[in-house]
Image 1 (cartoon, rainbow, N blue to C red):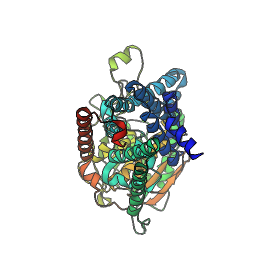
Image 2 (image 1 turned 135 degrees about the horizontal axis):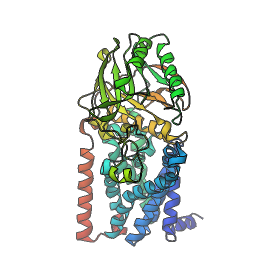
Image 3 (image 1 turned 90 degrees about the vertical axis):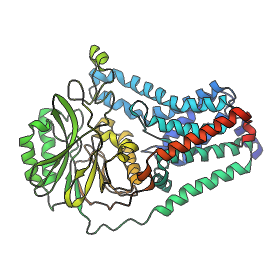
Image 4 (image 1 turned 45 degrees about the vertical axis):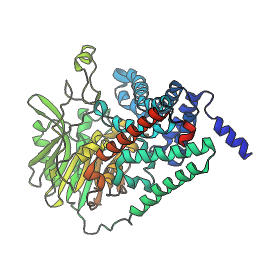
Length: 506
């Protein structure tokens, strides 16, 4: 029976490889939030690589990996249809096109490494090439590193390796583990399987060693995070805006007093330029406590999605303008064309979209230290957090996840905020309009949260920061150099020596 099973596994993927790839991609999506079934996702990745090994034709290998990506991105990012349904009569027709095109386009980043490795006759080359392509996905065309391969480890201690090797280093380790397992299963050799087990033990065991017991936060300053729970289709309606503002004020005025109050993205329904009366009410409610809130502002005919810091004296001490904007959401690429067909960004309130701010900045919170503000989508980018002009004591994420629906999007966004905490060794204070608002410690653990769709606030101690992590010091450069070196050496060997796939061992 065992021999029959191994023989069937060896034959896996000879027939209809793209269909196998699609199926494994759908299973791989279960590794993302909210399911977090990493123990299913990892075998699905191994299964894909077993199928890939059976493809001698580069085109078949590329189609198989592309189908895997379509299944993964199509299911895990199904929340992409939600923004188009806010005003369904106007933009609902775009929803299926947006999801299909996004899944098909992102899957190309996974197709070409498989094609290239098969073309060179060196299946093991898919490991560095795929990891290099994932790194490129974080930067190319403004970048979109949502759902990186490394994130399948988010529910496990292995995520702690992000502090040392970053998301792209962990992606490389993940692919190496899966490739070793696939090689062992496909060739029925024990050595690659033992290598996969050893690497898995190192990832999980080494990560567990970095996780101390949760810190005792007695004596730490307290943050109040307010969640007004304003559905996106009601948020900008005049009669409802007053109600949501009243929720912010009531929660901010409640006692006992914290040391910091945090409101979500675009918490106020007017421009900062015209918010004098609302700010006066907010200052009275906050009392002697600094308040950080999201709001839009105008300067020189340009509009910005911003965060503002109001001091205990009621003055606006600093503003931060979001610099990594959402294409097709906050601005339109090739705006001249889309204006011609009367299509504008989904989230923009200004006629021609938002303008980008100058880049990462720090807010001075006095005795609390300096804070790095991130507005919504910016928390998806490890390089944006690492680009801060100095070391912060905490990260403040102001977001409006009402755009993402109520299924997977908000939970995946929260998970990525946890990854930023681990990478930088910094606590994350997350204020989300409809949830999930949370306090996350420097090891990525949620210490307090207010669930999706709840109205209210949480008071929680601000976790202490850790010393700068290796990844916080170096960013993606070491991973890039390593991947380029390994991929370059592999290409050279494959071309000069015509490596036989069976002899390569992977």
